[in-house]
Each structure stands twice: as C-alpha cells, then as structure tokens.
Length: 224
Ligand SMILES: [Mg+2]
Image (cartoon, rainbow, N blue to C red; front, side, top):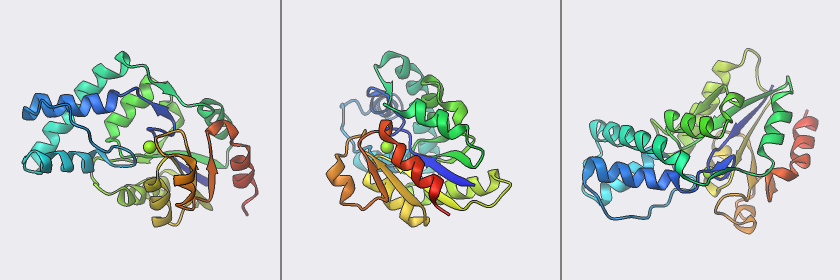
C-alpha cells in the first residue's frame, strides 16, 4: 500500500478566514481577549497556536484552559464556516476521486487541526468521506509529532504493510515533518507559501496546484 497523508488548510481547502475568526472568538469568549490579533497559522498545530496565544496574554497553558479554548474554538468554527467564502482548492476533487479508486492507495490526514475541527472543515466542504485515519493537532504542539501519530494511525488502519508514504502539504513545515517520519513530500503552492520558498525546502515534488498532479500520479505508480 501507498499511504498518502494530506494537510487540510491551503492544501485541500481554504476556509475564507473562518479559522482565524474562530481562534479570535475563542480567546474573546473564554479569556476576554478582544483585540483582533494576528497569529501565524500556516503549518502549525492548534495546540501550538493556543500555547502561543496563552503565552502572549499571560494565560496558564494547562489542560483545563486548553479544553476551554478548544471547545469555544469548535463552537465558533461551526458558526463561521457557513458564513465565509472558502473553497475546495483546484484539482482536489479530481485527484481524491482518482486516488480513492486505487486499491493500492490509502488516504489519510496529517493536520494541525484538532480532530473535530478537521471534521467540521472537511464535512462543510464535503471531503470527509475520502479519509479514514489521520494525525491531528489535539495532543501535539509540534507538527513532526503529529506526523508520527498519523503514521501510527495508518499502520493501525492498514491490514497490509505500506511500501511508501507521502505527505502532501503547502508549507515548509509539511516538508520538514515528512522528512521526520521518513516519508516523501509533495509540496503544493496553493497556501500562503510561493513555489520558490517551498522549493528551497527541497520537497520530492513541487506543484503549483493539485490540478497538475499527473507527475505525482506517475511517481506513486512507478515507485517499486
Ligand atoms: Mg496547510
């Protein structure tokens, strides 16, 4: 089996700002932080983002506060997703359709989103049914550890041993976490990182969008 681990934001879809608005809503509702802060989201985990916001606002980074934050964020996200003009990114539906028809390919997630947040986004954009397992941002601040848990989930899910693993993502951190678990990386420049920045991180393959995935399909077809 070939295991393909997909990032969500900037790779499969864009939420039109629902994610940031929901983080702000959670900080406002639970912790009284009313300023419309900016925070780097790309390639990071929800747990890591929360830790940074807690540090910035002198909030203790403890389990109860994390759970308050997560629950408020998820309530906001369910409200925000239908209000925003997000989209499934070009080529995604066609590629997932092609890949899901292949008996030698297993599709999973490798995302910094918490598990329920990933489900809300994928359900809203009708992509949820393609993915049977994944690694999520509930427990780990560091993406490399999410990658390890995605690989573990893949092994639990598959009955047969895998012969190749690819991580598909839109940020330098996706490329790095692929390397951390001995996987290949497909970088796609549909998020906030341009092609030259991604190329500098030396992914195994780089595409402008997933519309031009013929090279990728050829690669996963021909690797022994
Ligand atoms: Mg991303």
